[in-house]
Length: 264
Image 1 (tube, rainbow, N blue to C red):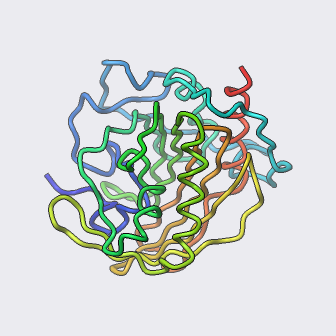
Image 2 (image 1 turned 135 degrees about the horizontal axis):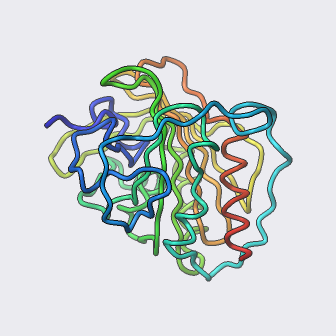
C-alpha cells in the first residue's frame, strides 16, 4: 500500500485530502456525490463531473468579492458543511469524490517552532485548536492511475474566534517561513517553499499561498474565513513547475455557499 501522492510529492503540508483515486484507502472511507460524510454507504465508482457551464466556477470571470456577515461564535454543523461543500457540477471537470476529513492521526511538526502556525493552517485537523466539524470534496484530473492535478475544497468550522486566531498566526508566521521543513509522525521530512500570493478579498479575510515542494510539483491554496468557518480551496499539480492558485470563480462559489449556510 503506497503512501498518498500528497506526501510522496512533499505536498503533505499543502493538502490534507487524498481520496480513493490518489491513495490506497479502505472502501468504507470512499464516498460519492450526494452521500453525507457521516454515511456508512460505500462505493468504488467515483462520479465524473460535467464540464462547468458558462459563468460557472472554472468557466468565467469571478463575481464581486463576497462579504460575510456570518455570526462569529456559532459554529456550522457537519450537516451544514456537507450541504455547503461544492458539488461535482460546481467544480472543474474531473473525477469527483467526497469524504469527511479524517481526524488527525498524526502530527506534522515544523522544524522551526515559529513556523508551526503555517502547517496548522494548511492541516487544520492537526492543529492545537481543533475544528468542531469539517467536510470536503475533490476532483482529480488526468492520468490513470495517477492524476496530474487534484483540486480540493475543505470546510472547517471553529468555535468562538478560533478561526480568526488561526489565520492571524499563520499570516504572521508565513512572512518568516518562506522555506518550511516539516517532519511527520513516521519521521519523514519534507521541505516546501511558501509565499503569500495576491488574491481578491473574500469573506471576512483571505490568505492565498503559493507552494513549491523541494522534490517537485507545485500547488496553491486560498484560505477564506467566513465568521468561524475556514474555507480552504487548493490545487496541486504533481508535475507543475510554477505554483498557481485555484480558479477565483471556484473559490468565490464555495465562499458564497458557506455565507448562505451561515445566514441560515
